[in-house]
Image: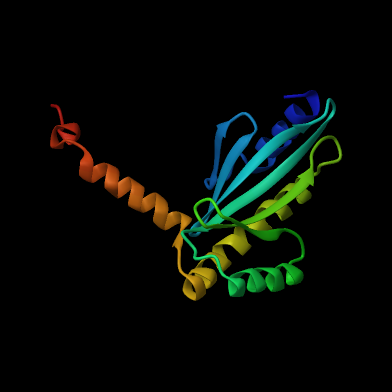
Length: 162
């Protein structure tokens, strides 16, 4: 990490750190939960003295790729204040992503506006897109994985010791 990326991390942690929805995964990587959506905030060094803050929310996985989906995502993108939907063929995943510049000019209002917008859009549109095109929401994927892990654990793993 360069100096600007470290400064950006400090600002993000200062602005979002007191929220119960905020989790620091590691330096430069954070998660914010909003309803059924999870926003990943990633601080990326850019050259020697700049940084980018990328906010990305995976809305769905296992969505059937289609021309209708592509057109709908493009139409919705044209209505967004900022940020854009994206489709990744690996895993047939739909994301909503927005990036801003980090550094000294990054202010608390900009951080909050960006994270809130990405979180609210993701939480709203994951249901809408799933209803129209199928797929699993991020929350559903995590719950399924957690349940699968519990079901494959040995009963002794959960024994209480006195």
